[in-house]
Image 1 (spheres, rainbow, N blue to C red):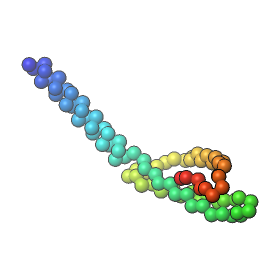
Image 2: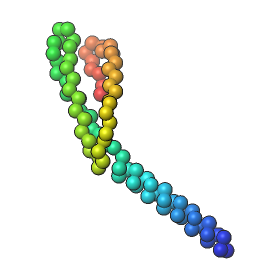
Image 3: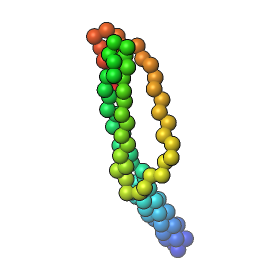
Image 4: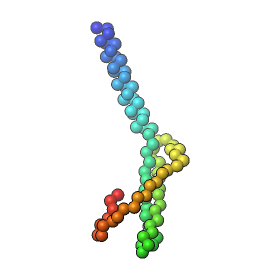
Length: 84
């Protein structure tokens, strides 16, 4: 009977620790908001200027020195738009 109570106490402690770890991770994980503002430079040549704004919405300081950005070219059908 004591062994069963000890096993239940160990399982409860492990579940409580796991729940606490998830709570701390969610509270202190980095949350960034990206805004992309576009402006046509020359519509005839198809030149578009993009301004990227990154806002830190998390409770911690994000010390990311480099951000990788990939721009892909897509064919746009006539009378259509690209989705976000």
